[in-house]
Length: 285
Length: 248
Image 1: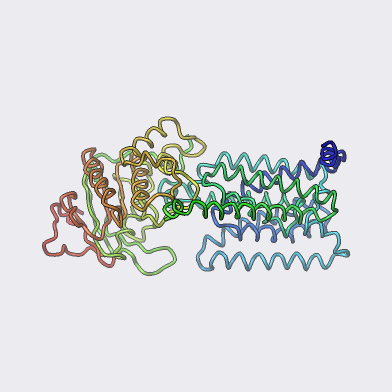
Image 2 (image 1 turned 45 degrees about the vertical axis):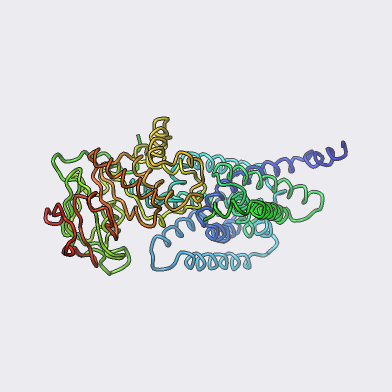
């Protein structure tokens, strides 16, 4: 028994592991709670695109020696507003526009990276390195988490309404597009905060997978958020242990843990349906 | 405190009709085809009017334009003497069922509660009174037992009643109902008709789009017949107790 406890607590004698644990918990909180809206509003593709378009911002910041987070934030906010603006007009279908912008920006980022002397410096941006989170990073992550949770709480009523019935929102004078911009902006901030943890390439997994798993398990929004947060935080912790003991990529371990939880949720849902077939037939029609 | 729209609490112009539409021309944004080509309509306060026509005749478009969902290309709409959007709390719009994401995780009770949001605005949470009003209309529509159901787990008729409950919870004076009797069960149909009578009693103005008057003729004060975005003459034998179009 003591051995197991030792095994569990040993990593956290180290300062960097404590910082990493806090980062994992905070990023899990942010990504999972905002991810529920992303999944329910079918914006998964946008979440993915946002995380990729941040790359050129980060690279430019790195090459010019200013804060990577600031570069990421600028690129993220620009993309969020750009996507919002593009999807406002109906000339191009939204998913097409996102596809064009997202690959273009990512390619620009890769091009800029290839100009730098060492490609290696960027691996932690691409794939994340939670063990490398500094105290400054942690402060920024905490600030972003606090801000996002506060705004989600303040605008919950409106975000919820515009998600399932934007027409009623418009009828009562509530502009659904404002809430969409707000969500895109929050999404950009969430992506920036999670880059240190899972990296540009896998950030959208932290947004979408926990929320998608939770949506299989419950029909209540608050419960969905709670479950998604639990899954994201648990995955973060599992990923930490994996990278500490097995010396594997922390970002990949975290994402795979999320995927594991999703498979469990899916399995549970399938079994649940099988067992309750007659009732669910009626329920889903 | 912080209303969604700054123009939200304009007072009604005294003695103005509930709805006055003059030569209304409307096109959907991004298209050139006109959905309404010069419609006139005047509805006095407390009247119940049917909009009758086939699919695509312009009934829904007319209701959406009045609800402020579509820009007016030319002509005018006056609601209690004000332009659309100047008195959101006074207009309730019942959309067709397909326009809502029914799989969203909220309960019927919460759906009905969103009818109160126009009175709340930003940041304010629903009060106990708002919940009471929601529960009352849910009860009136015979949905009490289903209050905590997620909205996709309701039948079509129940969903339609839930939407009507929300429109009632808003305590609006002008109700725009888009095909409320389309594909609903007998119980819902019966309840709806009872409710329209009750609304008449409360001096509410109701405009109902329908492609089939059926046995409802006695329940309306008049009808506007639409085809291809224009008003058409009443089909021979069709009722028109109050000459709706002529009042404009």
